[in-house]
Length: 263
Image 1 (tube, helix red, strand yellow):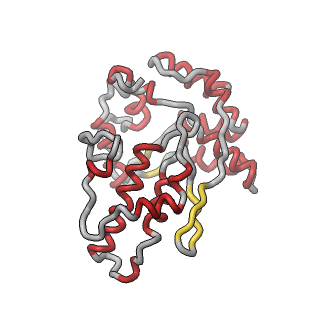
Image 2 (tube, one colour):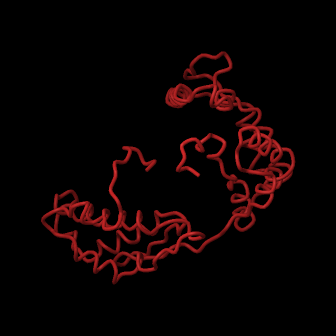
Image 3 (tube, one colour):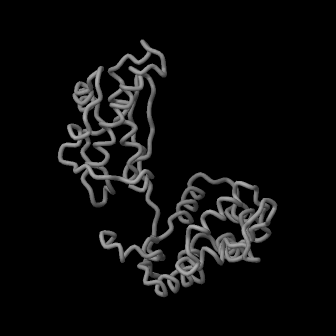
């Protein structure tokens, strides 16, 4: 869908929010305090507001200035100053609609978000803006639990987030790549130390770009977190020169990318 820039409308960038049922699952498994008691402080914070410091006021002003009110009316209605002036330190940010949503979640539990009034408001807004999320999508959402990704570095055990997140796999691969090198023979910030760390990162990030994705749709090679694969890959690192990106890339096409992490 996102190959066509015309499809990148604000509403089509929205998926079913998982946070509420995710937190409810964590609470059911590990919580000790009542659900209502945990949510009500957030209700008060939204309804009674809080004073902005200079940093948050500046960030709000920057975001509002960067997003046209005609295209993002909800953003300006929710986070714009009621007097239609820039925010200043000491101003109070009130979020009454958020407070109403949280109040329902506090009183009725997580289903109050995925069904009922809140779900209907979301579905109506999705239809208005030609989004994709429906009442059925909201009602059917269930959180998933996955086993953590396990690895090791010397005598340390590594527990990391598994796919569909790519960070854990990449971290374990980078540490596996670093393990054969005796980094303690040089200073932490020595050029040789940084060179080895960077070259390991480049190889792991190359594999990230090539192999990683949502496991529901992508077959992720087991070798990425295995020691023998890392040992063989580490042998391609020259201690004296950086490997050319074109040489590393293989079948991955190299194109110009933005300077931000959106790529």
